[in-house]
Amino acid sequence: MFKELDPILHSQLRLAVISLLISEKEAEFTFLKEKTNATAGNLSVQVQKLKDAGYIEVAKQFKDNYPQTLCKITPVGVKAFDVYVKNLRSYLGKG
Image 1 (cartoon, rainbow, N blue to C red):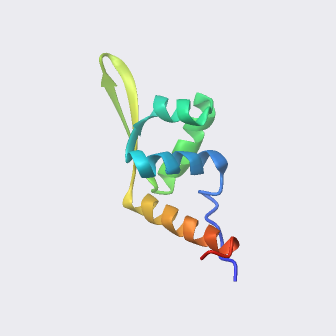
Image 2 (cartoon, rainbow, N blue to C red):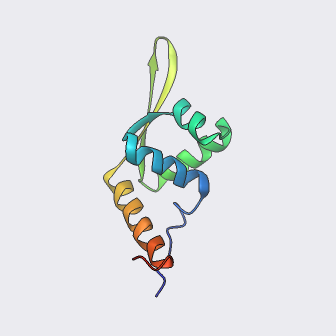
């Protein structure tokens, strides 16, 4: 039986962000923008959706007089990603 895929993570850009944060744990917004080739506006919207879902934490600060946005995956985000991957594997017959 196929399991439902998390609609928050089933977006290509949100899945890319979570995937990067799984390995990096924490990353600057500019790093995520560069790695995903997303526009700042689109990435900002998707980061906010991940934050609203509790999958990431977002901290805004200043570094060398420039604004810096840091994104960090939460334990809830790690669990959601693990469940998403497990459910996706069931579609591939490997779960």
